[in-house]
Length: 450
Image (cartoon, helix red, strand yellow):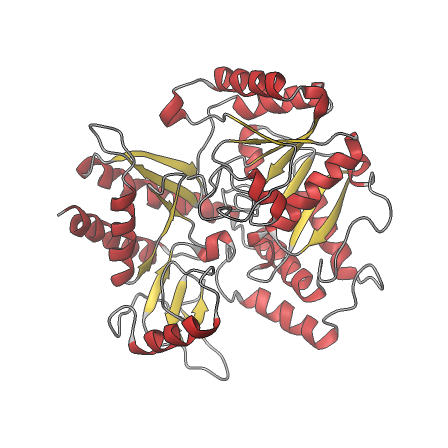
């Protein structure tokens, strides 16, 4: 990682937290007013500051404030904002060709991304890929491929899951507000089963899996299920890590009953957890893997990768889309894969986890409202519960995030009840920036609990 961002057109950017104005500053306030006139109120923002530049783990707003970014666009800029290799690859591709539509005239970059996904997703069997634009689109395609392959309609999902904002994925989400409220009717044949949530259910992996399977067998029947879609580590649900043995037991049941096991790795994949895909931590070899977010370094790209015989079930022309696998996004994705491999960036996730856990454990000693620290790699969360009543403390989470923002650190909230702080920093986050951010978090806790 470099200490400054240099360009022929902009001054060097020091990678440090820096406050120049109150948050939000006057220019952001002005832009916010312009936004209110022309942007739908349905498009909200966690922090109303307008970003002008970014590099590594630093965001710079239009007022000159520099924020330590612990959200990475919700896990998108995993290897850092404006990574030099990604920018160079995308710029070079822009000069060659920006669009032809792969289903009209193909290009090598799409094929290369598919080769890289085949090599890096779990399993040593023959795999194929379809590239699309977004995580929700990947989920939609994964489901329709599973339905075509099995000839069945049912889709099983888990409690606390989040899969997107399209009609089908809204039906697959656990939490209605704000993602689905008032937007129905929704797609049918979606069945939600209890998941493994060790902090709250206290079940072993085997017991939790038995509960999930029994529920699905009773309410749907295995013979009517096309697929089970799971996030190995649930994202919006609050970085819920299932009990040991839970996911392998579900996969074994799926395999025995001809159900396609789909791993939604949209947030947990692409080196986020210190493995290429979080499934590896649990010994999973999914039939289909869904990728998005961090795959292209900030450009829109997503994919469904899986067993060749399943992926080939669709008739020619049944898969694809106008912008799916755009050549510029594909060039960026190739650069992301190469950068992670060349620079050993999987280890960076473990480095960040060590720093985060140490700081959060120290906070937990001071604040018993932190009920649990959980996650893997650069995907860590803390859940806040009242220590006496065990009621969710969403109010405190919101106050801490707001206070940290005023001090120049961007934090994300999560959880079905809004009582989780999640940390999704880029792998470019230095130890110095991490320590500074944790000092700010400590101050925010003190201010919010005073």
